[in-house]
Amino acid sequence: MLRRLILILLLANGGYYAWSHGHLREWGFAPAQEGEPQRMGQQLRPDTLQILRARPTNPAPPVAVSEATPPAGTAAECLQAGVLDERQAEAVRTAAAALPQGSWVLESTPTPARWMVYMGRFEDQETLDKKRAELRARKVDFDRPGGTLEIGLSLGRFTTEDAAKRELASLGEKGVRTARVIQERTETSGFTLRLPAVTDALRSQLDTLRSALAGKALRSCN
Image (tube, rainbow, N blue to C red; front, side, top):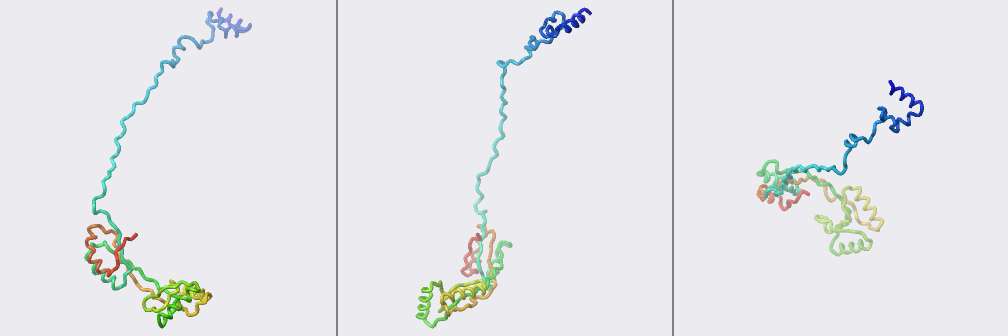
């Protein structure tokens, strides 16, 4: 009872000062001290700290990568030959019948029609040489037409008749008067032999097939 009375008097007469400065400690009234021994004992001591490092775990053994090369003879190559006409294609079909099923195929490869701007036929070599000299003077390119169109000159080959006629008109502006447009060839059916996966084992069986190709070489498909 007495303590409570003293506390009321002190608070009324500046007792807050006495309270905050510890003058009431002996009466049992005082703020808690932050520096009391038990709190100091709970503080960490930096000089005693130790940094623990995580122990490395055993790494998983590396996965073995095989560096072995494929066995000899397993690599396959794509080969093809063509273009073959109908007669050649029939001979190839007969020869290829002895090969493993699915190892070859004849693909349709039609040969498109072609037109030519043509000069000729000339009566003799002298006339041909004269025409060549005239074309060179006009800076007009030419070459041999080949086949039954000799003796003559080709001034260009085209996949359409309209393109050939346009070229003929352009040559007329350069002074070329005796040229004309002809159809060099008509559209014909053709075939390409393809062997998509030729292994060493299959390669040894191709001799008969080569003779049926009549000079058409087997080449890489790329």
